[in-house]
Image (cartoon, rainbow, N blue to C red; front, side, top):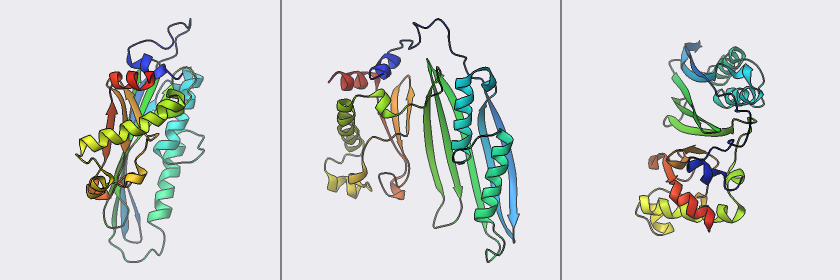
Length: 245
């Protein structure tokens, strides 16, 4: 598994030796648009959930679909249908942001979430993007990535892709690439750019593609809100060198 990422990005089929090929997912977008109201306040909700329409044809796909439902609708340890997930999520929004007797009316909130699924060889990449305003000084946005094995539905972590030595080196490489992107060679310069240098490290929020592996850092993950989202990509060549060291 430690060299899996390099092999994958080198266009090698991970399941080439298997006699049975995994069932490929068929993604269909489920759209939900609604306006929740309470005590003169409102919250517009827009969902675009990429559902695996043929999940029932594979235990692995069923596992992935259930995981995606939980992540997308932010429901911990959720098991159930898409309809149940939607209803539970809307009820949570109503309870948390539009409770009875919440105070002055006229507040307008917004929650927008969309997702997209993709397949690269024997892996599924699932990306969730969020944006909205639910109070405070400004709105929030972010990107959330998950990578699964088509063979068993297992969600991959960095420890599944890199050896311990490679992970240590990865920490250094990410810091070096951020320093180069923002022309900040010292921690003081990174701080001036809006970073929290002590928090810069590999993140489990990553996506694998033909271009390599991209690490996504949302506002406040490793820097102030004004810094914005930060993306760091390692190419297949850089990954090969990393795993060879």
